[in-house]
Image (cartoon, rainbow, N blue to C red; front, side):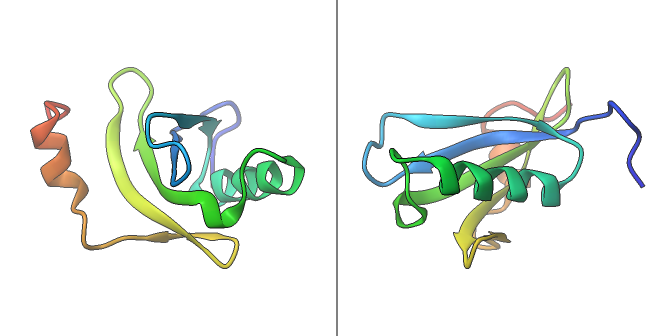
Length: 97
């Protein structure tokens, strides 16, 4: 159960075609809502295709966000890439408390 107006998950989509550019994602209450948003963008977009997505970096938190995980876009859904531990990346980037 999520609280109304409480948005925790946001992130960016990294693309194969342009490695220097990232598509920023708005804050959503759940990962499912974030996944549905990405699916909607891909349906409407002429710039980005599902094959063009290299990875999705999901952040959690508002004031001091931390990396929640690295996800792949598989069959229209976010799938966690377990080979990239988010805890270590949080340490590398100084996102831990």
